[in-house]
Image (cartoon, rainbow, N blue to C red; front, side, top):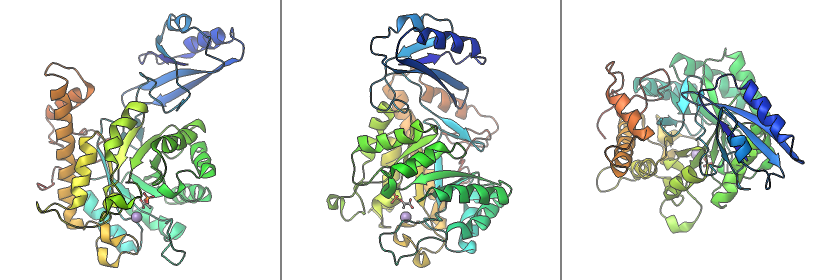
Amino acid sequence: MIILLKPEIDQPGEILRSIISMAQRYDGVWAKPYSYSGRDCGITEVHLIGSTRTVPTQPFAALPGVLRVLRVSAKYRLIGRHGGAEPLGFEYNGVSFGRETLNVFAGLCAVDTREHVARTMAALAENGVVTTRMGAYKPRTSPYDFQGLGAECLPYVFELAGKHGIRVIAIEATHARQIDELRSALENAGNPTGVMLQVGTRNAQNFELLKAIGQQRDFPVLFKRGMGITLEESLNACEYVASEGNPRIVFCFRGVRTHLGDPHRNLLDFGLVPVVLRQTRLAVCIDPSHSVGRMDLAPDGLPDIFHAVGQGLIAGASMVLVDFHPEPKVALCDGPQALTLDQLPRLVRYAATARAAYESLVAAHNGAGADTRLQKESHMEQADAAGRSRLPFGRARSSVSITGSRAAAP
Ligand code: PEP
Ligand code: MN
């Protein structure tokens, strides 16, 4: 059972004590409070754990300060929506992550040279993008393939991120010890940026890694769906991370392994975006690069990768993870699917346009007078007189992760 407190309560001490003492009246039941920092306000809730089946909701619902009480299904206790729990957006290093803020993580699949990192980050800064991906530890199918530069590249990756105003870098951890390596490298560099820990598709059920990633609270998590397991199994993996103490998770679709999607590398599974939005409290990311896996252009001139971005965003995803490389031909990992830096403004504009289309479609579907959160966000943005972002997504305050105001038309 989850007892949600009213969001306006900023000193929840007294109400928490009342809930805990009421819970003590029931044998085998204990109360565990959780606080999450939402984008606009904090969320506090108390989870009643144990034999709660016969515990009535009404006495808890009647306590002052309680917004509502939800009975949780056995599945996804922490990440589950349970028909009414708030989505778990969060703010990290000045960037908002959630269902209402579009974030584009564009960058190198694998760091290879300092120069390529510098050119990529300069292009991101030029296009107002403050989030990137930079693979340092690469899980590869063959032991003879490039395994990533590991900790060796972190000092210059972090230094250059600071120089170009990059606030968050998605970096995959393939082993728990790399979490400490990332933390120390960040500290040694003077914390010029932040890290979002990626769980790769091959580690989606590496339960010890998931536990280690859940036990640390420094870094939020970008969890990539297992390529050959059910959605339920992947969501349970996220529950592992949350149950160890870290609820700052974004769920990422990256295609599933089957040759039914040929000639694409994996079969696009972005049609399941609304399922995750409905069943869980997580924001959803899509990775079109590892799904499509190649740079082919459609007859309309757009790369298949752009079309995949559109399919994910139009289904409600709010984050995109996409491979770029200044010289794809010399990339040591996944060059054939990397977009070039001159395509970055187009990708940014394309993502913004697709997001805006999604917001308009939702608003239109819910009726002209519907007061949905998404509509309010769009109106806020259009009313922004500062003109720092004229695009109908994201926000022009410090948490904007991309602005794209200099971006060309797709
Ligand atoms: C990656 O994003 O670099 C990666 C290895 O992706 P995945 O785990 O989805 O294959
Ligand atoms: Mn890759």
